[in-house]
Image (tube, rainbow, N blue to C red; front, top):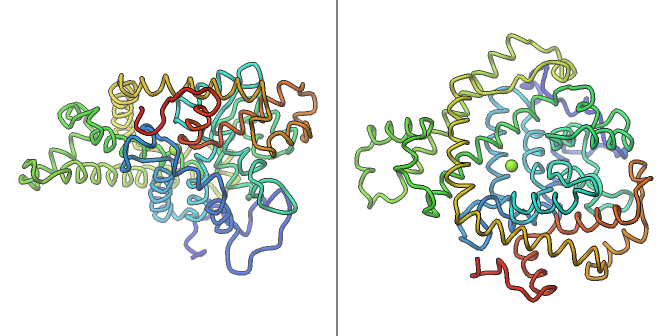
Length: 402
Ligand code: MG
């Protein structure tokens, strides 16, 4: 297996290691071990009840953060194998990349960011890192999952300069550094970003059509989809018959996914051959190398714009968005005013106060607000709605009431 790795792939035997040294596992590589820790984490299990675009109770067949993460892992691994990159690392990053997401998708994140604005803001990428570094409580000797540098590097996809400086205070030359010196992450991390994009563009078409918010007719304006729709119809004219159900949609999406995957592999192979990075360090010091070819980049951008205009901003989606924001704002206000409404472990964190160097100058209200944000961010959609009902008596976004 190892012999198939390219020289610029991440090699688990040359990992920059874990923050707390641990003996190697007898049968698993360090990245396989990271993946297993992620799958067994509490935050990972919660992804099943967290929204991607549609609220969890709107239908059983829509994507949740869990199924999204599995799709990203599948696409990422498949591309990694062709490019001779490390599949296990790609899988670990993909499964962890959304762990920091709030309930109610982007609406939840925006509302929590608004609440936290006076206290340093809220950002889901950074929160995913907080989950695996600090918030999971599973090991006797340390907080978090103690993952390898490379998995953590991939999880932290974006980071503001201020947050990077804070990370650097707690972990000199750690995962915050590349945002200060403008370096790239590993190719495996770069690949995950693209797999994420390919996955949500495809499954949001599926979910959007299923929900009735967008139609196949509308999608004929989107070249990336329509090319494959027309080709599918040419190959299988009987799929026009409505008794064929969703086969036309699925076959068009399947072809669209394959074309994007092959495009990334081809374009990246060319870029890698040209740049010929000697090792992972050369990758980090170079330019991004995993990307679509130019034509596909333009088409993928057009699909994204379509989804933004016709799905993410659809009045029906926007209506639940408004309620979701209200739930998060109300929860934040209640817990900050009355921390005993939170479970004891969160109250204890407030009492213990700052533990890390970057938090040393943090005032009490700021620290308390961060603990509240951590608690709310960890909630599933339905738990947040239930808590909101318990604390305010208002029935927002509870089952059957969207
Ligand atoms: Mg994602």
